[in-house]
Length: 152
Image (cartoon, rainbow, N blue to C red; front, side):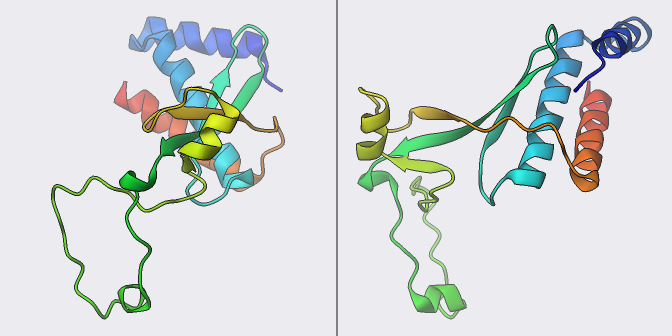
């Protein structure tokens, strides 16, 4: 999928000329691949991470879900709240979240997958590896890399 010689050459060049550490660029590549994967194959609300292996050129994609229990979840919205007719009460101390099946997993289900899971833990699910991104996803990846290199 990747031309590793070119990647190594670019990493060396960025490190020497711009003073950008290799780790930052590799992190930017991994983030860009995760954003491209999400754009092309993901669902709304998914938390996708990519692990890019510089030696082999392979990328592993994972989805991360946070373990929650009933006390951590806000109640479902009523129809009036959905329609926007009711004023939303903002409780600053309320750290509860709305349950999203793409981001959260109930503690009962998490313990079936990983014994000893506690609320707040993260469960990592492997995703099917893909390397054929469309034009839009590739453009998203490019923009992410450029942004992260500018930040570095």
